[in-house]
Amino acid sequence: MCDQTFLAITFGPCDNCTQNKPLMNIYLKNEPINYCSLCVELMACQALAKGETINTLKAESESLKAKLEEERAKLHDVELHQVAEKMEALGQFVMKTRRTLKGHGNKVLCMDWCRDKRRIVSSSQDGKVIVWDAYTTNKEHAVTMPCTWVMACAYAPSGCAVACGGLDNKCSVYPLSLDKNENLSSKKKSVAMHTNYLSSCSFTNSDMQILTSSGDGTCALWDVESGQLLQSFHGHSADVLTLDLAPSETGNTFVSGGCDKKANVWDMRSGQNVQSFETHESDINSVKYYPSGDAFASGSDDATCRLFDLRADREVAIYSKESIIFGASSVDFSLSGRLLFAGHNDYTINVWDVLKGTRVAILFGHENRVSTVRVSPDGTAFCSGSWDNTLRIWA
Amino acid sequence: MSGSSSIVTMKKVVQQLRFEANINRVKVSQAAAELQQFCIQNAVQDPLLTGVSSSTNPFRTQKVCSFL
Image (cartoon, rainbow over all chains, first blue to last red; front, side, top):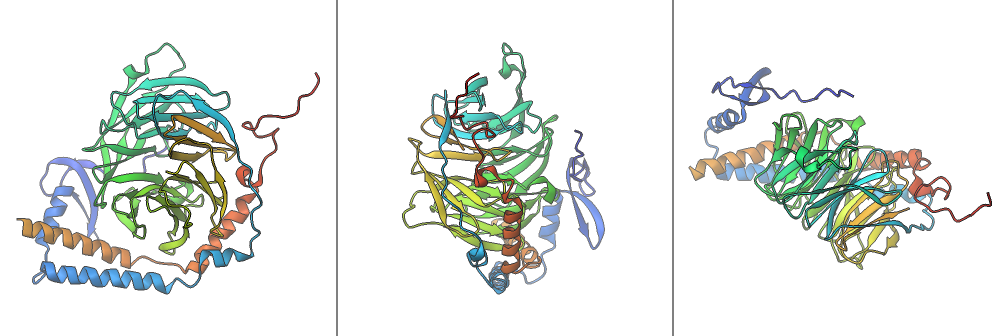
């Protein structure tokens, strides 16, 4: 499974300063130019046209923002739930806790499913990262991280490694071995280095690259083998709390959400921010792509979840109720995209009909905040992790 | 120096906005119809939506005990 890296970003001597650095491949008047990011900045400074002062730029940015709003509004001819009116309403849902995974000593902060649909990795505030077999609830591996608050964990696509990180500002990859006696910590590989906490990490389609987001306001793409930074993504003005990769068929983009209330869509090759959405009223805690890749949902501290369509470039649905006042910490879609599961800080999980905008179920069971919700790869169940130190599998 | 760096930041913001203003957009009615279409097409394969019987879902415990 040797996926070719899709990045054309090269590492080499810059055309301008001749230092060896990661180069930004940009085109000026149709000529390819390989400058390092520092030289691109300097070039941008020098290219200030005469008469461009702060005020003219501010005025232009205001008028562009207004134009953007206008363009987006022009296409807003109908609401999503109006289009979905003719669809059959969903019946009653009976979802119960089928397994409870106990063993963490403190709040569960993050979890991920393995592609084999049965293993789960979860991380907690006490620094432990545990790999479970969800069918039997047995613990298969446990790693103790050198830091507390392990806020991010991810399973590698091959199922042979897990990545995790948190307050140590790093993302570390642990290869999982079948030998129970082997000390996993000895094989640890530090891949990512940020200047603030790691909030989320995800492997791309192969075990070779990891995408991370951090409290330092940036996201970054790293090569696992060498630990090299392949691309960095700047654009958020506050901590980035979450990211999600587009489903593989639809290309090389990912979406990130942060404390600046913005959700940004990025092109992984160029590092360019291609779309930005700012309708939430508070921090965005979780973003997840719709299974077709044409939309994404976000959950926020403003107690709403929203659906943003990428081709219409706007928010198309809000999932909220007056009775829901606690923020949504995590969201995920069912396989067809019809259901949206949202874990909230009021210990419940709300299940929404994505198209009609109505809530179809509330799931009770956790005894503290729900911090993470993920649907299994084959869609037969979903797992929720909570500050009550347990994980629950619902089906 | 701070003057020029805020000009640079503003310039970046303006460039980003120009880029975003020029992307192709689709009407919400069309986008919504496509989302709905995807849901309908994949609804059959969604176990959480259609509900699978206890025998096929590995997480649901089987209620029936049979004599061997």
